[in-house]
Image (tube, rainbow, N blue to C red):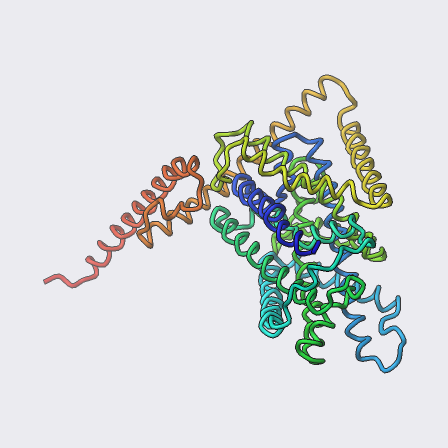
Length: 491
């Protein structure tokens, strides 16, 4: 019963607000770094640094979680094939495979975001098709008799909520690569709406099938999906779903490392981290220093317990999410007229009420977490604050003159950020102008994803770019036609 209630409300009260926030902010600030730069623009360097530390810690723990879960799936898959009761993977093999996996995904990320997208697209296709097979074969097993069972007193509410929200989070990660997206105002609304739909399909129905086959909580563990696959499809399907689990973890690790490295890159762009993290690979144009640093930090945490990784991970994510939603509201009040290609269709007061639901869930998760996880989160927050003080003290020494220089530096960072944003929007308008010119569509159709306030301002840019492209086409035609006429023989 608890799973049914939470699975019905969580997508709408947790996932949808996060996805809508991501679309608005990513279109407004299409910069690599994502929410680190949102918070910087809304609240300044201190909270941006703290948020960056939360986000980086969350990402590193996520990466470690995916590598550990990969080993768990592989061990279950090999154990079913073993002829004795010995462990299929000893400690040495587990660590070696985790290291090789990190090297593999690091190389893919350095080679380029295009390769990251293509590889994860193939892996996602395999996973989605496999789940479709699960639905078609396992749909007949669905019943709701398990809803009448009492909620077990052994349920750890902190771990349950952390795992539930962890499985339905991550929409905001796509904003960390915003400057590498060709048309943010088109791509983000479309991709996140598809992602929200796929989350509903790939999470709810499999959970209902599993609950129908194994209604009692004590029968659930990491390998439950494999057991369900065996019941509905036999031994071969069980093996295939084990392989799909490995593909899933690989795809998640690739994309998470990509997003994680852009967090360091974004922090370095506004002087929150050393400028070394902004270095791009000379051939692939990827932040290779940030990618390698993220991989090395991930390696430190691959030896930790899965349960604690998930719970502590979500505590840092909850703290970061509180700052993200606060930045969304703050920028609506402080920058109401800024260009927002997409805007959540709520006024400021209603928007504040709308984000209360996910922010409340973050607070509940912080309250119900175990004391050990709360202690780790508190230590992490203290380290972030202390490191910020040390960083600023090293730069400033506390004098008035240096404080003024610091304020000037913050303003310069914001101005540079705005120039980069203007460049991305300018490129997007050029693309829309080309679409408008080639297809003959009206400006309203070309700008259908843009907010009402931004649409009028964008129309002017779009009309200007379209006119420039038409003039260029006309001048090229006039230059070519006389040359063609001069080559024709005279009569």
